[in-house]
Image (cartoon, rainbow, N blue to C red; front, side):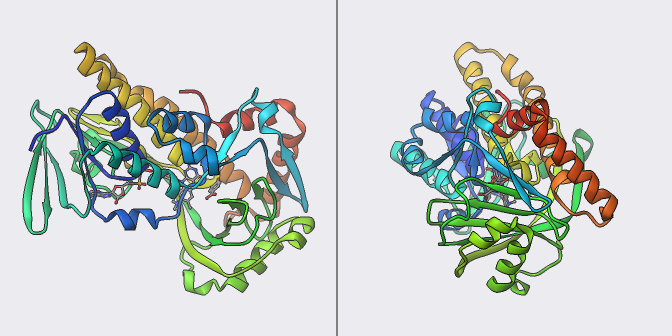
Length: 390
Ligand code: RFL
Ligand code: PHB
């Protein structure tokens, strides 16, 4: 079999890239290790920047998003027992974000892809990118015990942090930057009305807490916890007690609790690998970088990467020019590092670290106090949160 671009990974970056290429007439095949159902059961991101929404609209996956998504004009920073609203819309010159779950984004992209009849192979074992340093790359995989080969012009590694693409690159060709945080987030989903119609990011001496949502009836809440905690250690009652203690009194009293139907623990990490191109293999999304979720940037970075990559591939096919491909890594990394910086900063300011202590707590509160009172500092926060342009 032959195609123009083999995309490894059917997460948001692979699916969005596939749609951007298909609508430009570029033939592509997606391969994923797991089943479609497995992917649709992963609960992850919730906040979409306007640039991400625009790309989803562009590829015909924006209708349900506009019907069911919740546009947000601001969010609350809580500390010292009080909440303070950041007026994102006014501070950013008219930008807002959309609260719409990654699961739904993925479903909409899968539906749009299926409607065009483009090939996706789920449950493909031992996917391996080959010969990408030369002119004739190909990818092999196994399905139902049979080995398959797809010849192609380019390979897009959209297979997440644990994927095979980055690992296929010779060690001396890649430089990795990493910071592992000494805590995780325990997240739950419950069919209870959100405590507030906007997100609340809370700094508390007991640790960080986040109140988010998926709809007006479904809440997504997180608390900072030790990274080696087990999900089983966290009964619903323990979770509700803990988040209540970390919120300002007004929200703690208003919190509606109920049975959770999803509970998971995510470790927090910042990671960047450079470059993002190796001959005819390109990395995009979590395959190339990870940010802690505090800045809500991971999925949005996946979208800006595949925007740059699709433009470069379209330029290659339409104008026979390599310039976009040659620039891809540098262009994507310039935006990636700014989001890595923002996510690291939000994480540092909002969480309790082993060495935070009383001095560190006061420093965090002073920074938060400055942030809410200085129009310049609030504007910088809003500008980054709504997403830097791409
Ligand atoms: P994904 O989603 O991990 O998809 C990769 C796909 O590749 C497949 N794969 C393979 N396929 C074939 N062969 C192999 N060897 C393979 N290995 C892996 C996998 O099965 C999978 O289907 O990466 P992608 O597409 O780059 O998307 C990245 C986003 O998923 C991620 O950045 C976000 O979820 C991060 N994130 C958030 N991002 C935001 O923009 N806003 C948020 O509000 C936000 N909140 C979050 C988050 C991530 C979280 N967790 C769980 C880490 C909240 C949390 C709790
Ligand atoms: C979410 O709704 O899952 C969510 C929202 C904001 C974040 C991280 C996660 O910063």
